[in-house]
Image 1 (cartoon, one colour):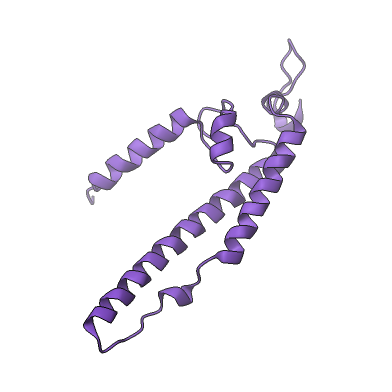
Image 2: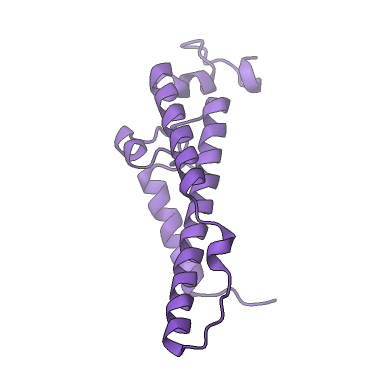
Length: 146
């Protein structure tokens, strides 16, 4: 048995997990690791905090509306940053596991252009589009209770 319990391919002697990681050089993976860590640290440094979404009362109606808009914006930014931090963390785990750059759905390599645009991408473009369309359908058509 090869690593991770996979039998080696009899024609190449390569274990499937090794075969998948052969398309990306170790130097490339290390560059992505450094980039992801830098992105994570950058978000953490400038990250909005929950204090940015605290409710402040005002006697002026216009100021109240303005504060509500600022709160809504801060909440959306905080939500987006949290999501990206989670995706960066998952990408760093994939690097550690040797699965970085491999689509989580179809197990095909993720294109270098996609990884350059979204270094934390876990899905190839095709699979991501399928996921996005499925999420859109689920958002529009709520599931019926049993």
